[in-house]
Length: 392
Length: 117
Image 1 (cartoon, each protein chain N blue to C red):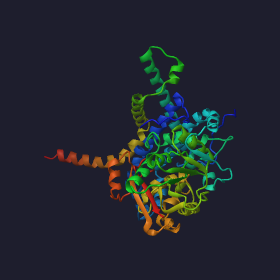
Image 2 (image 1 turned 180 degrees about the vertical axis):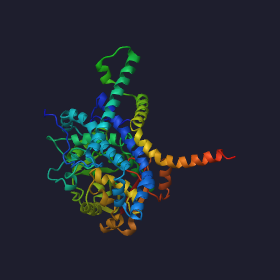
Image 3 (image 1 turned 60 degrees about the vertical axis):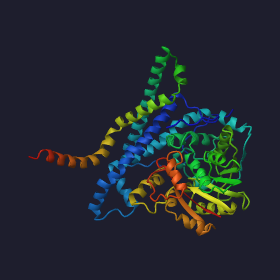
Image 4 (image 1 turned 180 degrees about the horizontal axis):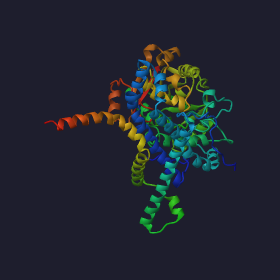
């Protein structure tokens, strides 16, 4: 696993903190791969036969699998370790972020931007799907400000997410957006966006690959949470990347109709709500120019998965504070996209192999090969990114 | 300069428990945290040994300033993986037992096969 790429605003962890973070990374990978790797066998050889014996039939859906698996000792052990480890991820980073304050906020406040811009809007109301729960158990979520001009949640997210994914997304934690940006460029070489917008950008690590991928394009990035766009702005400047950050709600964008050639998001929708998902798709349609591209990378729909796979993927919805996750993975995405104004014949979906990890498979998919089966894995475990969208 | 902040959960909600007795979930959390602290201590010893090998003497500041390079990081990652495997052996064995059951059947077949007249 690579080291996280340094930049001027990444918090400095002490000798022991770094050691603890590196341990939690390994522990998380062990729980995911070694212990999690036994879950299917536990289901097939113990839980399912017991269910069949007592009920006279197999579990009919993921909810029955859920109850049965969490009544089994192994399912309980895996679950409690998953939960504890997620808490440990944040705990391992918090002391470094607390210590970095308040100097970090002061430095960000006094930043002399040379490349991009930051536009904050204190009138933006943080929607309930962000304010009501600490998503991924991250203390304070994306939006909490503990002092004036606070960017600490951005700092916490930057380092914490790297510990969480074990560096699997590369030194800049941007494997997915880099894959998607490259896919767009390679798949549609004649598509030359002049203006692009990312929704739910957080700290902009998913924005920069689009700046790199489309050097002629003016790239904007929006998020409702001030701390993450503050930090994202500082991070982008430190890395010398031109991004225009906006504190803005994707459900009610302040941009005029037909402003952008490209509107995208990376793993955002499942952290919103049923209503917001529909509103955001409509906004995507509105701010796109005719001929523009909307593209989103997200969790794969569970529609065609067997009940065990759906249970395994949806576990996070219950125990990792992702309240819309379950509903989202059951949405009819094609219907939602077309209801937002896009033509049914303009809808597409594609499973894209990770550019860095599987370059040959990536090339094959660019060339038109279709991967049928969705690999059962959470983000970070899988190396194939479910992506969908539509042309306007 | 403003006061240092304290980062605490804001809206994490009630902690779920997976065992009938929530104390078992708490015990898991404690054991996992302890396993992390032992690993941290192990790294500190490793840092101390490396610095002593290099310099023959060391100060506390030397230890604090030490950061693993790629080679040391890889060695420590391997050690951590092996360590985790030992600490949580009992869970791996339960996982393996579900496969081992089939292996046992194969083994009996092997016994029968090799014991034929």
